[in-house]
View 1 (cartoon, rainbow, N blue to C red):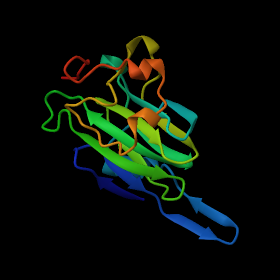
View 2 (tube, one colour):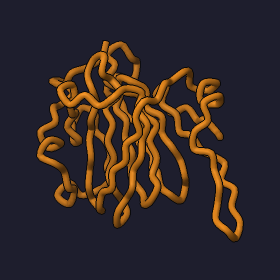
View 3 (cartoon, rainbow, N blue to C red):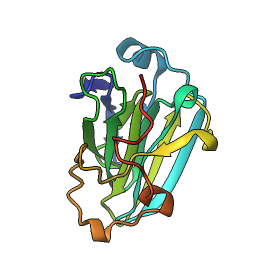
Length: 182
């Protein structure tokens, strides 16, 4: 596994080694000792999975305060643009984002530490998205940064009128009003 730190400290693309032959392939998707060596100790406590169709944008979500979550995300089927936005006020990269294409084909994963908003846009006909989190889901502490915040300026490179969002995601707050971490 290769751990590649991104332009925001603490955010990593993880590229597993994929071994294939006529039967298919094998790869390790998580190994605790390597994770701890490159990223640090994380105790994942919940796995989640979603399936979405072309043009679905989920996010930019996060949980507040003590309910914040670190995430390890990947795509089992399809292709997405995955985005993490730094919401840590004391960070030199506050309000900046990392965008990475994740797909079943490239097998990349993205590690997102606590203190970030996260979302993804489906670029293929459909996508199955899975992720590990280090804190359980707390709906009362969930919040959303609006996907098209002008200050953050995520380059989705997709027509906004073709995006499919939930009412909750359309009601996300701009960076100037959203809960931020210290």
